[in-house]
Image 1 (tube, rainbow, N blue to C red):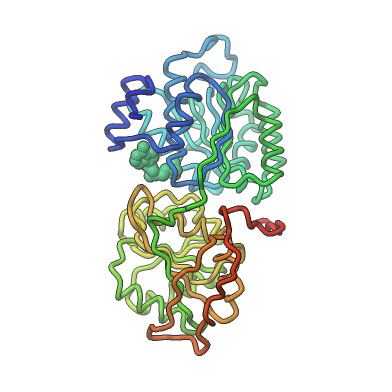
Image 2 (image 1 turned 180 degrees about the horizontal axis):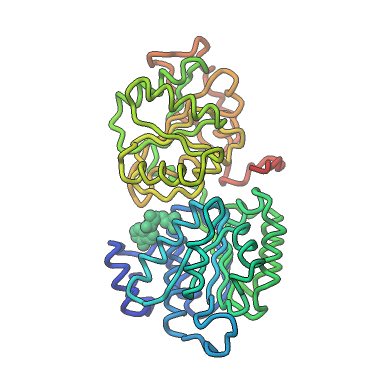
Length: 412
Ligand code: AMP
């Protein structure tokens, strides 16, 4: 299957070529033809699978080929909002906006992105000029709707992205408030990396006869990411990180710490050791986070220390190394973290630091993966207690989510 086979209009095909894409990804193969014909979609796919293009390309096609029927009758705006994309985080919203910009560059369709934590003036100015596509985080969207800057009565296509993260972040009531303002007759596209019961329930209530696209996430990046565990005590983790960062051929390294304070301390330590690093987490002001992300993207700062929530959805292809400076509390988070590298067909490296206190978490990760990760203790900061020989009777997981423990989801 090639992009030409979908019947997308020429300006979109040109943009795809300009992006350098040759073949559609599996989710694009499934989703694009269906979305082009106006059908609802339930997509179970993570960031990194090409899901943004899977919805953005057919949306642009539909908007360009089906001009708004009653443009003149829209009492609020000459150019009504025809597509609303709801995203949990500012970073992801900005990335989706960038995708619409890139794929829609030859179509003449207009888009804008609204999110909180920044002044609303530039956003309301863009809205006044009129946009076909609005990408928004829930809080700022509702705020601007309340002030009368946004009207959703003309929305034809509604996209809910990263629904599981939305619920984790406590946005469920906001989602319902937004859905209540949307026309009943619309196309809805719903994406979530995981499909627990509450997400399925939400999907059932806002979708109409959707097709379901579930990507085989059973082998998440496992083929392209080489994983290693370093047994190391907590006090030596920073020195080990410094050692590996200096030893290895790092293009871009994303380092996950358990706490925000921990992230800041790692940055301070690496800076003292003449390594350029910045932290991105929710205590940082929005402009600082954006700047850190830009510096990371451009390569000016090759090391980014992140909390899980801030890093979710970071869409940067050339991350050569992911470091789990701390083991994650939830084994599923490990999968999300290492999925930041080895993307778009490239290879990646995921190193995890495991202290004595974290060995249980390591067991849980391996159980979820259904495989044993190579464990190293012959490095400059070995743990005094090497890992016991592996048990052969470890239950093998058949699929990634088949060993989910009873959920104890936290509000992140
Ligand atoms: P996403 O899952 O939407 O976050 O996309 C992950 C990355 O894959 C993005 O950097 C896209 O630019 C890239 N991408 C999307 N579709 C394709 C494709 N068909 N071929 C190559 N790269 C792609």
